[in-house]
Image (tube, rainbow, N blue to C red; front, side, top):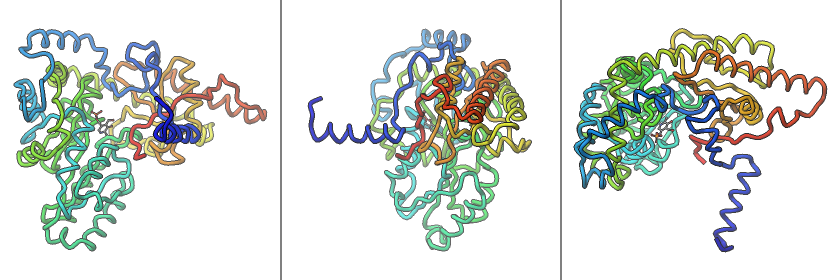
Amino acid sequence: MKDSALTTKLNAALVSRDERKIRRRLPDPNTSSSNSTLIDFNSNDYLSLSTSELLRKRFLKKLNDAPDILGSGGSRLLVNGRAHSALEERLANFFGSETALLFNSGFDANVGFFSCIPQSGDVVVYDEYIHASVHDGIRASRSRDAQYSFLHNSIPSLRQVLTKLRHERPGLVSGTNSLFIAVESLYSMDGTFAPLSEIVDLLEMTFPNGNGYLVVDEAHATGIYGPQGRGRVAQLGLETKVLARLHTFGKALAATGAVILTSTLIRDYLLNYARSLIYTTSLSFSNIVAADCSFDLLVDGTAQQLAADLLDVSSYFVNYIQPRLASIPPTLLSLPAHLAENSTDVPPSPIIPIMTSQPRPLSAYLLALGMNARPITWPTVPKGKDRVRVCLHAGNTRADVEKLAQGAIRWAEEIMADQRMGRTPPESRGQTGDVVFLQSKL
Ligand SMILES: Cc1ncc(COP(=O)(O)O)c(C=O)c1O
């Protein structure tokens, strides 16, 4: 590209990101693909289905038998594939929802929903850790000037926000306006669960006229929690208490695409106004077949066994590393409070952040030992909450997670020894490693 005002400005922005150590780069494909020799503590392939022989065979057979297998040929509004409609019907039945509507991705689904459903005068309230796609949807909506966040998973903070809004906005009291709460059932960076039942109770108490609505993003819970992997909403029996649920196919289901489960009216409205649905070619037939095959594994119980293995290895890892952290300063290595508490109220989570003030060196050290666990820093997570995020998988063994814990502890002990001796840590302690940015509002 020739030098110009544009190239100068673009370069300056990238250099500034470099200087602030927040420049995004694609990771090395050799370290991140599912057939890499590294132990995967990074991908969202929670059930290890992306390497499942059973799923691969089923997919190839179904694909071979399918009447349509290549491109869908256009937007759903122009070409409504039979396979697409059939999958929606199947998913509405499976999840116990009035209707289902496919989107090309979870990102598109959130943008589509939040950009058009809230009407003029309505308000959107969201957990401070909500995914970037919800932010983008709200920004494009009529509620862009009426959006409020509450502290992560804090019922007192949510109560405060709702109470204040009722005082300030008579339309919310009279019921002429609506309020939407956006949460994730399992948060991708922290592995924390939204207190869904408490949120529903609070919403019903604060908005007895029924003009308060809950929207739950189940991207990270799909396939893992609830009966047959139907998610946390189903696990807690809240299906009739939420306005819409989002399930994505790209994480535990090893496919691509997403579905919004909601009412007939909302579905019709989305078909008319959700631009991320209307103005895009719908999923290819092979995408639909792939997702359909993954749901076969949810229905026949295969995924439930994998989910049990996943949660077992997740608990094992936390229990294994926890006592070994006792002699290490928490700034160097610690588990977040919700894991340190050892609460029995919530199920285990496969997302386990290892808090550290030095996420890049730790990640690089683990990489040198054959393990892929990525550093996450500001602006993806708040300042001071840097971490190496561990994502576990059904295919991870107890030996894998013991190796991970031992590697992290050894790294911390070597740093402590360096500090005692007044030494600068050598390269082998890891000075590099890219940072991942997934939720950034920047
Ligand atoms: C909570 C959450 N919602 C939505 C999405 C987007 O889903 P998809 O990857 O299908 O676009 C993601 C993916 O990163 C996510 O973590």
